[in-house]
Length: 261
Image 1 (cartoon, helix red, strand yellow):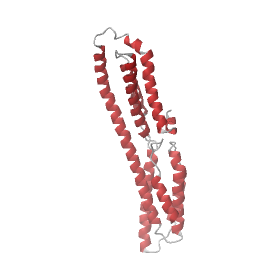
Image 2 (spheres, rainbow, N blue to C red):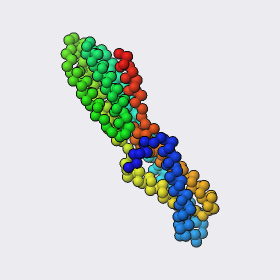
Image 3 (cartoon, rainbow, N blue to C red):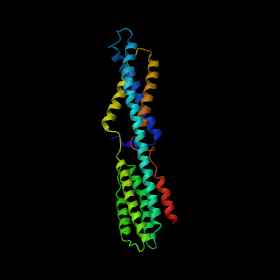
Image 4 (tube, helix red, strand yellow):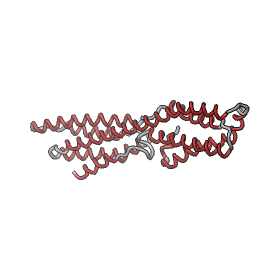
């Protein structure tokens, strides 16, 4: 239900996230704070009590946010490595194909060129929307069929053909890993815990006994930081979506190279 956040710019997303939490904090400070304060206003050293509870809560919630941020970043880097590995495998396949005799070499290069172009122009924009495109399946099937029709005439060609088939299978494995990574994200139950925890954190701040302006300032600062942390995690949560996403630049370089052959 929150996929729309990946259709806007990172700056706007950050402003919306921080603005939402700051607005929640300020509205609660003005409206809900007097009601909540009625439960603790007669207690002595209420600020010490609330500060102790908030510090204990903050330790656990801070650990949760920290671990989620590290996990999101690590997942982003892992998927980025998968894409780099796939591009390297495709580059090696293109090198093997370039060694074939004519006219097989030209036909195979053309098929790889068309596949790479469709990957950049069609498949990549689709996966940035969370859609697994099927165009690449047809293109790679056509390439495979053409590859299997080749009949080696010499021992050298037999070795070359066997290595190309091996590299083709290796590329399919790397490609499948990328396709599986399109739907990679933090489980929804964890997002629910994060959002509920943020609301509880802000609610605890409302219990402090201080002047209204100080309350608005300090509560706004805390809410803004919570918003920035959630923005950071959400931006890296889905590696192929939003402004902070993995680029198809390695495949563009391969396509440029195939155009020159």
